[in-house]
Image (cartoon, rainbow, N blue to C red):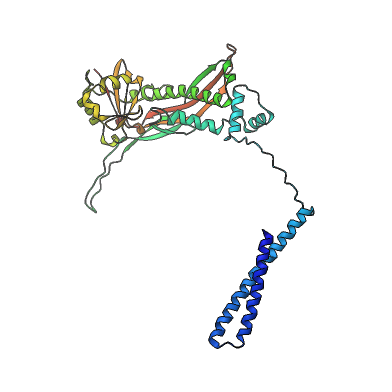
Length: 380
């Protein structure tokens, strides 16, 4: 390929030389008008000649180098392949697998033991993210309230008296009434779950072991926090909606009607209507509400996520309060939950069993910041 191109360049250079000689000869007898054209052509030929000579020089150098390599004078020295090194940062799969092996007492290699030792056996980032998604994002009610992550005791302001804005003439007397601000103090409460499994877990792949432990521990703790958002007493637990919102004196009739549902909606202030949700038991929703023919056009089923009059329906058996069916309607973003400590998973050892056990624990507290953000109706 290089030889062919070199031959083409040589031929073209010969043509340029020949044409250049012809131009110079013709210029001696040419008239003034033709002379300008001949000079322009000669300049173009000289520029083309310079480029071809540069290309020829490069090709000859490459051919010389190839000849040296072929004769062994310039033989290339192979570059040793860089040994692939596994990463053991807290956000890597390798570290997550090593951490999982440690908590289930699986055999680890020297590299894995060193990684856990240098990292202080912190929980893998991938595990933390998986726990958070399953604990909060996928939760029925916890996924809808306002969740924060402050590590210490936290205080949230709330207005106990809110005065309306005033108006008046420009330059006139201004009468102001300031709001009265109170506070909601959230203090850590522990939520934990002890998980016990038999030796059959030894037959599971390490990825499957990790997911099985995380999912089972998180689901149990998520259910406990989810329940307390609705019915928690506030003593060593979240303070639930039931403890904060008094049931209306108007009861839900034994036979639910469209009018009785609209009555519940109309009771909630306009400030909280846009983000409002329904909370009720499966029995109330499936038997009483879906049984009302007049409501058929106002119930939407999107993959078992129901909406009633355009508002999400959260089904919780705990909405059966004091043996009475209750319906809660309001804005969950007015309920504040703080997770003080991300869920930790640690081996749990006891002399009473030889089975493998793990303890998952987190700390949380929560309370409704504005009691007018929800209304509550009980059925007669």
